Image (cartoon, rainbow, N blue to C red; front, side):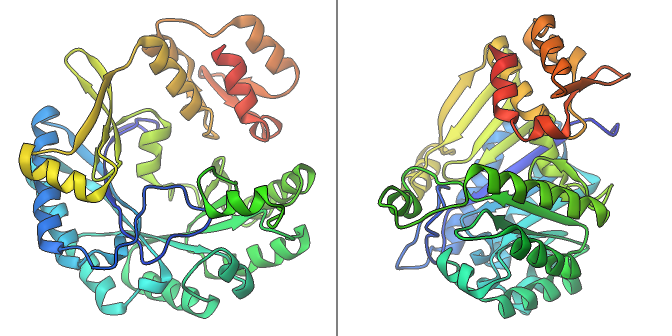
Length: 384
């Protein structure tokens, strides 16, 4: 596989959490009674078999167990899922198998179980290295627990990443820079650093509307973003995507499947997929409510509720949206193949003239550092 090949990924969604974070709009659910792990393992493996019949013969380059809180899965459940994937498709020799984990649900024995099941990369939801902010973010762990989890992960898995959130209420550039430097002391080779956004339907959205939650203004948020990029780049972990930083060669292969507009299977409540079938590229989605998803799989063999054939225009817009998130940009020739059209030369010239995008000698279009700061506007302009 060449350096910019998308690969083929499997995303599996575990929808359960111990508590709902006030900023989270993901498909995550809190249940009083713990899920029946054996029943869920059977349903997930049945859904895997269904999709394997749709897209047989693929080589899996990455598997991502996301959520929710996948570290609430029993190691036996994780093992059953990975075995099912390996039983239906061929796993690449260097397949990346990632599991998301919360520091509050980390145990050394459970980590060893995940490693034995085949997980070789962990992504920890640390979010902050400040106890007061962790509490306000609704996290169930403190800094001490987060650092312990990072240590355990480094001992157990070949690869590790952890997430941080910036632009938190009252956060200054100075405080964030100090926190980020501390994070670098513990980081392995990958960090995901996200700006706090207020999502509709969340507790934070309600507080924000009432004026009880005030986030940094646009100028401060831009300064925080720039401080993040420059500090991590100087530390040898440049941004390879808007919010993701890695030592070169340690990029998250699964996320590259999305951003390079590859194929991926989405399995589990609310999971989305993109599959190329005989008639074209399909956008798929599964039933969101966990209990309904489970019932669907047990009665019809899959939990799918959406299966749409994408038009060429829709595919082009998706590739544009995803590809421009990457520092490497997108392949203009591939864009034309996917969408059946070329980008408007006058719009490209205008954006280039303003120093927001550039075209490389090998025919790739990418955003400049200035362009990354207003990426949504650039994508909207080019897609118009």
